[in-house]
Amino acid sequence: MQFGTSSIDFSILPYQEGINPPVTKPNPGFLTDIGEEGMRDLLERFYMKLFESPIKELFPKDKEAMREAGQFSADFFIQICGGTPYFNQHRGAPQMRGRHAPFRITPTARLHWLVLFEEALQPIIDNQLSSEENIQSFWNYINVFSQWMINTKEA
Image 1 (cartoon, rainbow, N blue to C red):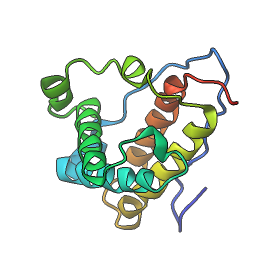
Image 2 (spheres, one colour):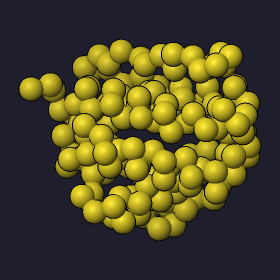
Image 3 (cartoon, rainbow, N blue to C red):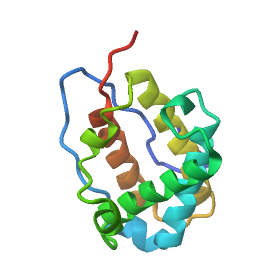
Image 4 (cartoon, rainbow, N blue to C red):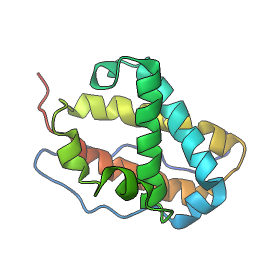
């Protein structure tokens, strides 16, 4: 999907059970461009979309708890983009597959998650807060990362 004149490729990689493709961290330039506050804003937007989404049952039911979860996620993404290791400092090593294990994450839930993340990225694209190359790198990371979180077959 393309927005305006953007050439960012938001295609979603197909999920293949049992295949975990290699993950490449995003360009640190994405964080440099939007800053820590921009990353926190991005994750707040994203988590508020999740709060109203078809996969909201996977997340906290209380809006303030959801905001807090979004900030933990922002800590992770700041760290993964080469910033301050807030996640490690506050929560320990990421070990994201283990942290997500208690939640039933299906391939369809992954699709919802990615579509909402794309929507949350829209203001960064519209306001040209980061280069297309850096946004693409971030998208490519979450596209593959999301495959690793799937832990439940479709019903």
